[in-house]
Length: 266
Ligand SMILES: [Fe+2]
Image (tube, rainbow, N blue to C red; front, side, top):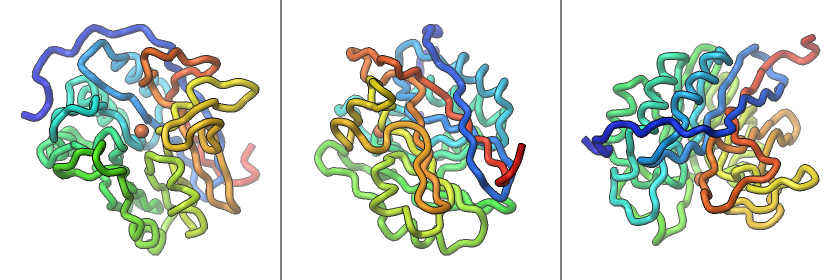
């Protein structure tokens, strides 16, 4: 087995909340965006997250990356751990779940993927799936193969967004890095993209984030909704403080709920 076989540590008390944003769409759906849990083998708010998810009653749960966390020295498969797996196993009992790897999951192995799929998670590694009127895809930050992400910057599959956009249906894309949206996604007719990675900008002052990985100071895409025409990017602030030694200010950890509803809905 490729995750650390130890009992899940006790819960840690954190300020984890639900935040709901409304998005116009031809379908009426409640999506839970669970990003940046950054699970490691220390106390993690797994039960709190599942309690919030149950209370929110989402139709679908989206995991756009960095659910697991490695520290840079882990080998392939070693970022996998019981906290993250228990979160995803519990979520799969609440609603259909979709997961796209983030930069911290570059070392996920094929065995890890099989374990996730066995607990009911649909892994979308530059793949898509049709679900009724929806087409749900995942543009990976990393790769499910042996590779040290610290040696080579992650490069996305730049052909994937066009392949995905060519499919019929209302497109929901999981894309961990919000910076990919402008570069590779926007302008193709992909109606909704769910991202994380920016951690809300870590500190928020006057409604703006201060710093985000990949975007630097005063990041453009750090939190909330961004629109280009009828295309929307939704960026979660993340579920935990991944930078433990730097507290977050005015930037609560969250499960982001996206309430999709037709224009003109009350
Ligand atoms: Fe990330």
